[in-house]
Image (cartoon, rainbow, N blue to C red; front, side, top):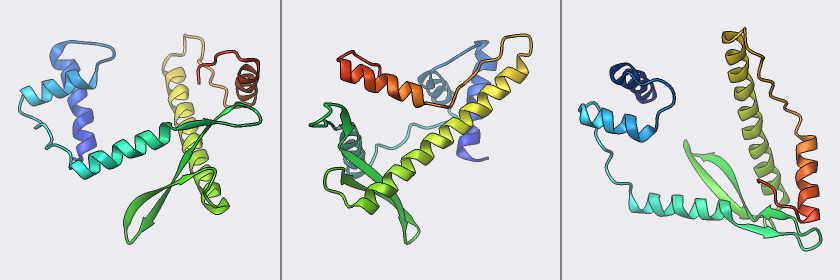
Length: 162
């Protein structure tokens, strides 16, 4: 059994054994599995890996403001590449990176969004089909108006939930 499959099974088993229903936290299930001896707490993360992850998180969060519009933009962008069978992530500053790098970063980010939207649609379709007596949950995927509303809110000084 793959690790992910085991983790999925543990959640179902936790719900069944405890009699809980509805949403649960990962911490609840982790504690349950460790207490039962089914999982061991992982070894501490390699310090270099931890630091690298912290750097990536910080770089991802850096925001600047466009001088002419005042709108916020992400300063750093990532491109995932595979070299010699190993995956690595390269980071570039949007104001300094060459166009091919930024184009690849934008395309990869768009593909992530498409993947999320595809899965969201599958999830909503499933929910709607298994709850036929309820009003279907509609998930519009045209974000044009949403983006324009956020731009307008930025320009008018209104706070938005970005």
